[in-house]
Length: 127
Image 1 (cartoon, rainbow, N blue to C red):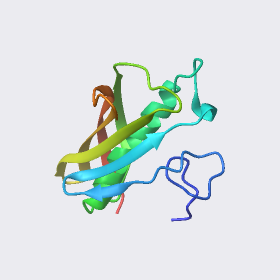
Image 2 (spheres, rainbow, N blue to C red):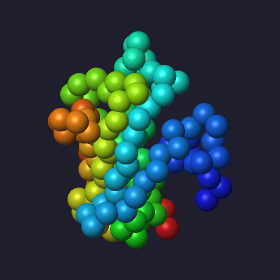
Image 3 (tube, rainbow, N blue to C red):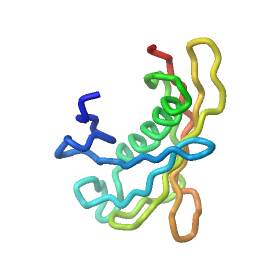
């Protein structure tokens, strides 16, 4: 890896620089977005939310031993993600068969723990 990934790369000046940690059942990241990533005033752009969920799914697969790339991403945004507020993103592997890995991801409001967005992600193994 060259550390230039838009989502997790520490050397990408314009990137999200997500810090992703492995857990017993997947991966987790604490997120607080600056205004660079907003759509409407003080609300995160939907594409950024999708990017976060996608990255969590890919990392969950990677930490489970599956080097893979997204081939299908289905996102459901339930409520706004506000700029400057803290959120928890999680990712986990649902199943792996042959070259296909199915993963889930969600983004929760850290204070109320209500779901902001979720995703079902299909990944194709590339190793």
